[in-house]
Image (cartoon, rainbow over all chains, first blue to last red; front, side, top):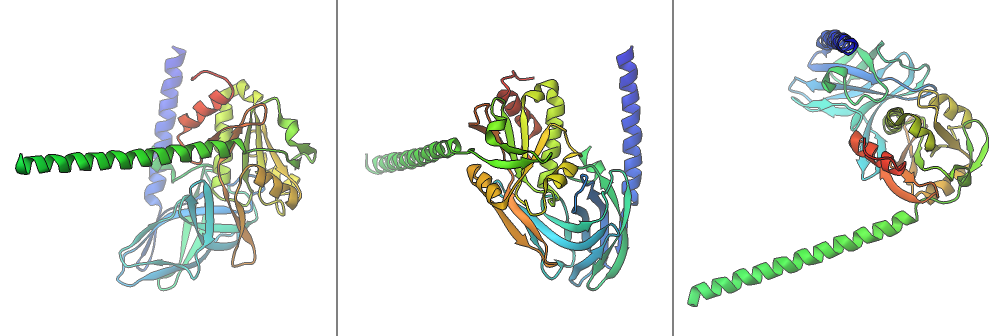
Length: 163
Length: 203
């Protein structure tokens, strides 16, 4: 009897959770001219961490190439685009120089194992469940205000992709 | 015979050649595997560092229990927090059995990762994880002992990030290398390896 109740409770809780997540996800699209940004998220940071990774999908719906050249987050001193690569067991990281090109019709997925936005000189920890405001700057499309969802410490993608 | 005979000879010759090539490849792979085992036996060794409480420690302090050894740094956005979180989850799953395990997080960035910084950072993970820092020379010696590649990568703002080996070495209670936890390996694979390291059956 006890088991059944707790199972039911758990089910109800996760159903509510998933439902609320998908509502949030549906709303997370941002546009500026030909550039569409979907589901921006940041990983929660451990105590004392000075860096955070930002992830999203950026699509260029226009007929001209564009470049992600900058951005900002009030909690961080600096914004850069980085690329992470695993070479066997070694993790390599480098800064993408001169901004990241997005070709016409191209969709670039930023994720923890590839391109990502690297926030450094972080002034305060980012907590799971919070929403933080940020800005992205494109060479042609211009600036756009976006909102990042803060996901769990080890999240590999925005919440709803994991279910 | 004529044509058919010739064809048979050709087929036989091709099969023979294929057999030879695969035998050579197999042997080569086998030998390579052997040398990897030989190299693995060299992983580990003496180190002299400072733990996140500020206490001087050496490798001998961790003998008597199996030990996980992971090299990373706190200015690391993905591999390090992901691995520490995975270890945290695995320790929780193991429960009290995990008390029979040492977990060491050795910084590859002693310049920024002081014992105090490691203590703060590790407060977000399982309290059974110990952070180790030290002088650049002593960190380099530990990296060498564990066959860890680590290199500074300069950033445009004058700062830097680190490239580094992301593997977690699994050492037995005598400080001998047994196995490794690989980044993003299936959780069940790592759990089985940890249970084996602790001499536990499969759950």
